[in-house]
Amino acid sequence: MHKTAIAKLAKDPRPHEYIKLKGENAYRIRTGKYRIIYEINDDIVLVTVVSVGHRKNIYR
Image (cartoon, rainbow, N blue to C red; front, side, top):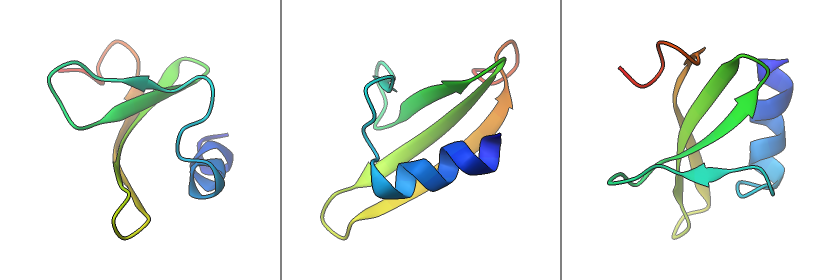
């Protein structure tokens, strides 16, 4: 499930369900009860996955 969501980010780093995190240069998408936090560098077309974790622990 997470691998599929991450693979989709490679094709479309800004899917319709993405949300920009406040005060950070990072975004998040939901995959069930888990969240994927990632950054986008448009200059070199690079998506960096920062963290993957359960929704109650990911923002700590």
